[in-house]
Length: 387
View (cartoon, rainbow, N blue to C red):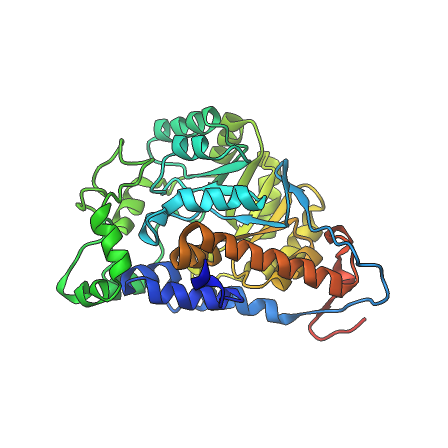
């Protein structure tokens, strides 16, 4: 843990992750689509909102716990589904799931994980969510639902913004492949990151644990990730398919990857429980708006019909507080915990959760609120308009 003691914020952990990872892996984690405008805007948009405190309130005890998707969380954020955690640390998804359980928040497993649904189900007893796509092969989609139910997952999350894969140019520049391959171009970077390379040699199994039994093209290296997405994910999916999957699951159901008021209204009609307002971390459609900017219009349009989760750009606990003030029920984080994972495995992920939860608690107290339930739009200054 000593190597993490000098990490005081998410930016520090990002720097440490960059030092620990070969360039190919780091840029796969950190990159976005096309010009990466949405990637940058996801975080910078939070700067458009200022916080207005009210003083002389008793904040000797501050409660930041909440309930989202029927899950009791110790903090108003949880861990988003992210693919292929084994790329960043040999402890892979196990480290992230254990950290979430220990710290009292929700872990989300991706379909594109390097650990199976069943193995995570057997590893943690706390609440967890499985993220799913609708594949061209509907039997595969139905199989995932059955496996997630059998393994005790609390919620199902459907990602809908990947009809085709985004144009992630960093992957081309740095030669990203699954499984990772040593080439002349990447050799120096791998050699100078000896810890990562050593763990690769010790355990080179990079298979997509939930997909490989249906299709071995990725694990064998005969098909790139982008090719796989474009060949297997169903671009013909409609709201009828969402309603079908909601019925198949029959539990807390999250729609991830929509940002518009229209989609929010349709999500309510389809029977969704929640909406993760997300542009896929800026990795799909570039120039899509920042999730934080979409929350207030959606909340105004649908009232309390859906739980709203800001997914994207969170780097400070104050970002989370701003999202709550705008009407979000919670936030979810992806890259921050991957930085922690790369920097220090499970302890690195715990460090990220601890930093953000402490920042949320401190910001809430400094606003003059004794619980996050008291945070509202009156605590925000928008467009420099002081009320």
